[in-house]
Length: 200
Image (tube, rainbow, N blue to C red; front, top):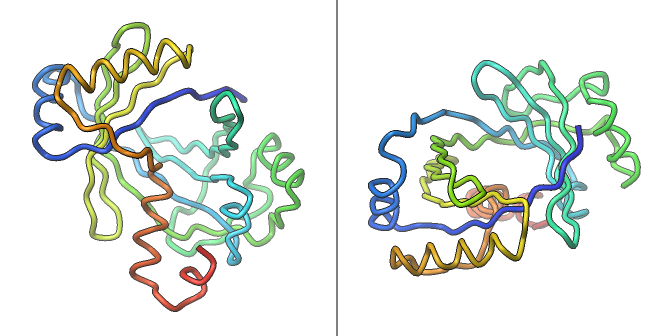
């Protein structure tokens, strides 16, 4: 499956998280999902601004390749059944065809793919003004952070609604940093001086 993702993100303080939780998410049941991030030893996907992950949630595994475009992020999905152990290699036959074709288009050596870490999220979702409002509590590499996301189909309209929401609840607008970027940054801190740090 292929789809265009349009979403806005903002990291939150504990107080901001609490205000939004009370205002929107009291009746939203939390779902635990874990992203297992995949790359080559030389981080070829990162250098091509690509993200490859397997998301495990509700007993299923979905592999997703994300590719930035001018209009949003193009996503390619396929169900998989993988060994989700840290440092585990991803076998070529595990790759959904649609994802394998895209990786080959970027000359990514699919024989070198492996899992290099995981990020677990407690997620709650509610409909909000023709979009989906998402409150996340993320844990990775002994780190916890809090995040608000707003998923929409219309970028201009969605951006206005999101900014108005931040103002209404007195939330500071912060630079957008994706989950995988935050994961990479923390990994760099931990592995200072090794191959990961030198390539980031």
